[in-house]
Each structure stands twice: as C-alpha cells, then as structure tokens.
Image (tube, rainbow, N blue to C red; front, side):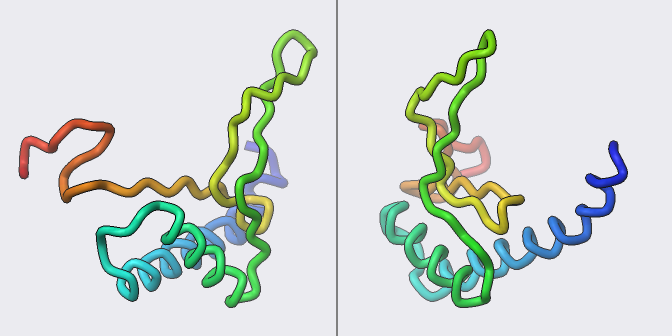
Length: 104
C-alpha cells in the first residue's frame, strides 16, 4: 500500500461508518418492502443532511486497450469521492440473487 492510501484510510473508515449508520436509520424509518429507488433517494438525502458529498448514478466507464468504453455501468452512490455504495433490495429475508439461503 502507498503512503497516501494509508493516510486516507481513517477518512474512508469514518465515511463508511457514516454510510452504514445512515442506511440503518433509513431502513429503520421506512421498514422493509419498498423498491430500491425509495431507499436510495432517502439514503442520498440522509447523507447530504449530514454534510457529506454524495453523488447519485455515477458513470463507470471501462478502459480497455487504451480506449474508454461506456457500457452504461452506473454506481448507485459515491460518497466523498471515496466510498461506493451499491444498494440491493431483497423480496424476502434470506434471498439474494434469486437464491434462497439454506437457513430460511
């Protein structure tokens, strides 16, 4: 790791903690069962309310063979230009990517 990455780690950890706390607040307030867009909009509001720079649907181009290719990839949220947040909503507890957990 480079020195700059190590020096930035405490800030990334602080921002990550604020993101997790904000996400928990949003989910506690809204409860389960809403679409991802609702949670994303509320989380974006919550992060900005705390004074964080949070961008929505940030383009993520792919570089290949010295060419930048726009494949339409988008990051849900980017916080403080350091933390990428990808939201996922589940239809029921224990379900992810169409598979059920063996513990449900």
